Amino acid sequence: MNYSCFKSSFGFGIASGVITTIGLMVGLFASTNSRGVVLGGILTIAVADSLADAVGMHFSEESEGIHTNKEIWLSTLFTFVSKIVVTSSFLPLLFLLPIHLALILNIIWGFLVLSTFSYVIAKQRKDSPLKAITKHDFIMFFVIVITYYLGKAIDSLFIL
Image (tube, helix red, strand yellow):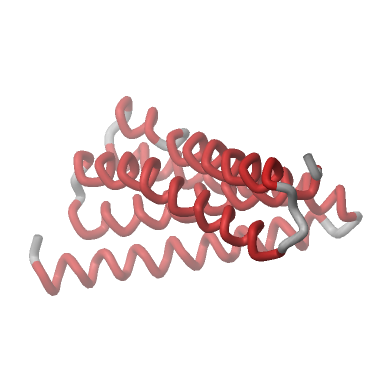
């Protein structure tokens, strides 16, 4: 298999898994303050969004017209597996700890995962790791802020 195909699939799954899950957790918590709702949301996106991203990667690889059928399916599989594993990695703390603490620790975990992958990719590309980490962490910070206030707005407008 083309190594760049693997890297892009794996990287997409990691970034999407971290940012989507953190955004969902923060938004659902801000609007409901419910462990069950947050857990249900994460379990749902672990399956549905992982499959959707994998199919999206499949279409993307097919549309390029440069990959073999095997490469396309492996890329689809790598996207699915990396996304579901990363998304699921946020679940244990939610089962074991009070929701507020689990949320804070999961946000830290998300920044660590994203920063580590950003560092590895930057080093491979011979780019500045600090610049890559800062850029990707800023995106995640932005998602956290937006989803928090969106959750609060939903809570005040619809009184769940």
